[in-house]
Length: 323
Image (cartoon, rainbow, N blue to C red; front, side, top):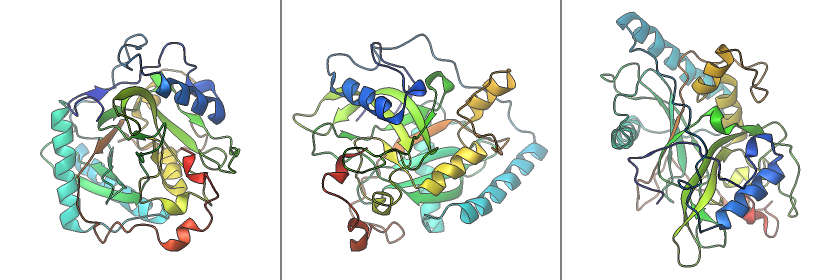
């Protein structure tokens, strides 16, 4: 596991490795791979200047909290309309995962976080799901907006990490970039179709899933995957450590700026950020945190089915080595 879950992981580009923000997906991936193999330096030791702190908003008034909750309920409808890969999570499980989210935030000294969206991934091999939550104030219960299948780190092969645990800050200090839509040597579009957004959380100390284990710097990203060959396999561990998400979820997060509040802060300060969509419709209750937990569930819940046999039919030889 990457550091204690009580740490909020800030983006920290490793010295000597090219940042992904200005790179093509291929060069960004190679930089990440090269750094992941460099076991001599921890991500924390390779820190750049002090990160920009997250933007803070005052607590919502009673009226503003009511309006924000109504916005979140409307966003739940949009999720159903816009995201094609959805999980039908029972109400009892929605509450249970809200409790898990709260524990992770408590451990990261963010227990009072409210008034903004939060994304959470359960990396458990029997779950492999991403959830979006919102609450207007710390006294409100967490409201689930939607859930989708994902693919996280698949240990047991060289250069494959376990997806790190903790709370990760999505900050423009470590700028996102967009997929070129090109294929690798195995015919795989590892970052998905052209213009899919790569959410970059910077360098973190990852737990190696090969050899004798241990820690190495890895570039932690959340991104779409090959829409034809790999997206059907979401729901199982299948990446090199990143979080793979459905293309429609990528577009939903991107269009509505669900995790873009610190990007929006720079826009409001007069900065031009080319990575942002021109047609974005950013929510006024955007957030900035991706939380990764491991519920360690021993059995597969019915609401999070594994991919069927047909999902494997389009996977070429060595196709599962793409992140």
